Each structure stands twice: as C-alpha cells, then as structure tokens.
Length: 275
Image 1 (cartoon, rainbow, N blue to C red):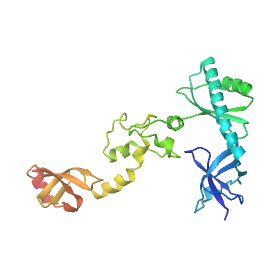
Image 2: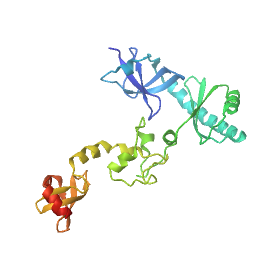
Image 3: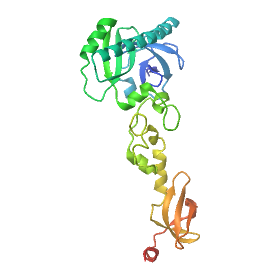
Image 4: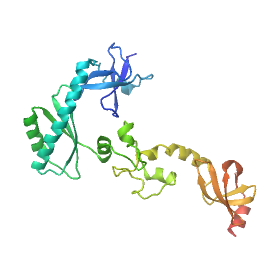
C-alpha cells in the first residue's frame, strides 16, 4: 500500500494527501510539496490509517522534508505578503474598485502571488492585476471569496465570545439549514442565529444529529401521555434533559422524565380530553 501522508498548507486549512516517498516524518514536521500553485511549505497533519480511492487519486510524492532555511524563507515571505497587500490596496483606491482585499499569499518559490478579495458586485480587476504584476514582477492570481471564507481569513469572535470556529479548527464548511435551528428550539430570527459572516452559525451543526435522535424518542407537542398523576397533554420537551413538560387534567403543569411517562393511544381518553 502507498505510504500516504496528509499535509496542511494553512493552519486551519483543508488536508491534501501525498506519497511520503520514503521520507521519515512525524506529525507537525514541515515539508515541501508540489501543488497546483507551485512549491508550497506545509505541515504534516495526519498519517491516515484507512486509505480511500479519493486519497490516492492523482497522488504526487512530497518534494522533500523542509530544512531550517526553508522555514526561514517562509517567514520572509510573510513580510513580502504584507507589503504586497499594501501595494495592492493603493491600486484598488487608485482604480476606484468596489472590492475589499483580505489577504495576499506567495507560493514558496515566489513565482505567484494570490490575492483574496470580497465584493458585492461584479469587478473588472484586470488592470489591477496587470499593474501589480508589473510592479512586483510576479504572476498575479485573484480569488473572490464568499462570506464564510472571508470570516475564516479575517478571524474574529462569535456570539459566544470565543474565536470563530472557522478560523480556529474547522477545515471545511458543512451545510447549515434553518431546519436545524427549528429542531433545537432556537429562535428562527436569522439575526439571532447568524454569525459574523451573515450566514447561519456553523455551530448549529454540532448538536443537530443529537437533537434529531432524541426527538425521535420524545412525544410530540399536544400528544396525550399517561403519568403517575393521570392522563396529561405534552406542552413541550427538552431533548438534552430527556424530559417533557405536561399539563394534567387539573390544568397543573409538571416536568417529568421520559422514563415516567407512557404515550397514550386510547382514543377514549382523547375524546374525554377534547370534550
């Protein structure tokens, strides 16, 4: 079996797989790899125990293990990237372009500079790219990002007060839907369940499956159940606590564990209650 290694080129980026090519490596070691953008410096993220066909598709060997001089060069590139971003910002103002520059990235051999930007309208950036290429003597690639990618690049804090998940540990974005918020009994006001990116918060996904499984066990609102105190109607439920709030025939309400109720299927009781 091919000796495969997973490499990250950004601290919270996607993992790409390479043939280790016999190089002795450990987790967090720096490596040089050939990518679609040319040579790149990355870190070893994982040695997969199970190898899928997707991992081995178009697999390339690592170029080499990074040397101290390689790491020093990468740090120097960070300084060049900041200068390039400033230069690009001046040109954006000069050409009066409706775009927001987010970051600049050189590939490892400094032959290509990628500029990430966001915009709410169509932008013709060809003149910007030509002038910047002329000034920096490098190939320019422009990449427009979506709202979530912008938040990932810029960072910040979420409603919880903690650093954004996308900027600290999420390597990819899972689909998030309003149905997930509804299932977790959260307010359906988008303003209250959206992140700094303006999209539904990624954390809605974390407990979605748990709520879905638990709600299958719990009776629905309005359903009749039997309790030690008699027949009652379900008002609401708490999936995390596995409890239900019920209204007794006396109109008193009480919260009971799921283990202390039985779903009532007797139509006679339903007629009595509805009557």
